[in-house]
Length: 213
Image (cartoon, rainbow, N blue to C red):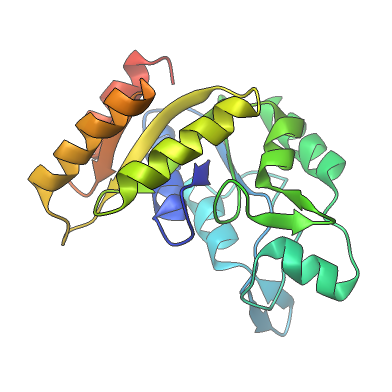
């Protein structure tokens, strides 16, 4: 799971998919690779996205986000500032463990496709290590055509499959405008573009199922 930008609804979409597939009887794991802007508690740092995904998938999985940072900056920037490294091999092993135990595994990156992950690496580099099909979450409104098409091109240029673009439709979005954007993104990229949001989850899940997801 990647986004065209930060704040596009990536975690919300990931959590809704995890919940829906769990309710359908599948064993689902949802892992946040790294998270910044975490809350300080007596027990240590708590990542709100990590907590949300863990609960959405049924609170069973043994592997959770290992890289939590307090500063509200890209995880890689926070890691570099602290002189620590986000270990992609460790995250890959986490994912492999979850894949051996679950029917579906969702791995959420941080921010967009080229968001820093430390040591001059990006989310793209992590995705290359995982070698999984990519779901791109995008805004439904103005600007999404350009951002979505560019992200699709970047993912494909890295040699990975774009499984679908998920347009995160929010309650205050213009529905007809979002559908127009869907058509344009599909025309430009030939990728499946699926609106998803409150009231659209069932149709989105049906379309994903037809794609074999």
